[in-house]
Length: 169
Image (cartoon, rainbow, N blue to C red):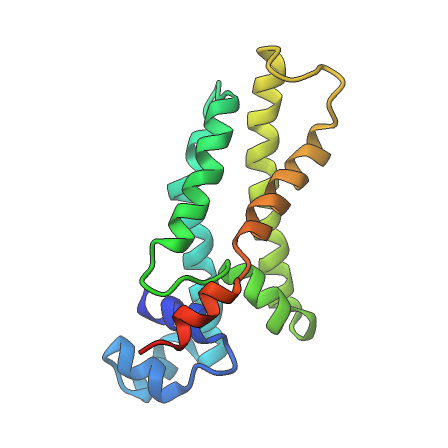
């Protein structure tokens, strides 16, 4: 969890092995023995992040009968999760997509899988809402799900206020 937060705050490239081992309370050899290298640790951090989002925030959308209010509550909870940390930041997966996914296929696959997980959860909820006639029967559910994910992730992009908060001690 600590390594995930360090990558989240600084990005993959800026997180040094010294910072990572210090925040985890281990030595370099333990990091290498456990994760192989910094990239291996980063991949585990991405998995951890995906698990937190999926397990903590999307579970309610996968129930038999979520409804529109549950979709709204999930988006609010997603945003709340990402800003509850002492240093506001954008989504780790969005940051990763911009920083290194285009250069690393394994990372790109993890980012894409994360987005598919979000989209699939919202699509299930939208399908249930359509079944309850809360949305039009002609609604394009995959497109709406992509839109909801896009709205949530766009809302989480750093703003000048976030950047100023990061620069303060």
